[in-house]
Length: 95
Image (cartoon, rainbow, N blue to C red; front, top):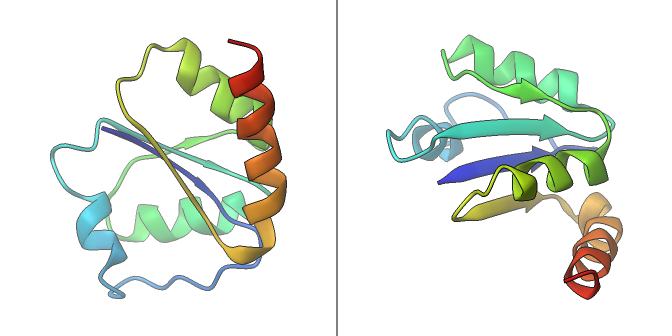
C-alpha cells in the first residue's frame, strides 16, 4: 500500500490515531504534497515515519501511478478535495 497525503489547511497532530495507521508495515511509501506538505512531513518525522516530499500535487499523483503502485490512497482535507478530484478525473480520462 502506498499513501499520498496532500495537506493544505489540515491540522493533524501526532497522537490523533491517524499516525498509527500510517506507521503500519503494509504502507510501502508516503508522499506528502500540497501547500503545507512541509508541515505534514515534519509531523511524520516526529513519529519516525519516513516520507517523500513533492510540492506539486499532480506530479506527486502521476509519479506514484507511474511507479506501478497496486493501491494508491490519496488522503485530502476539504480544502484540497475538489482540486484533487479534478486531477484524478483528468488522469482517468487519459487512460
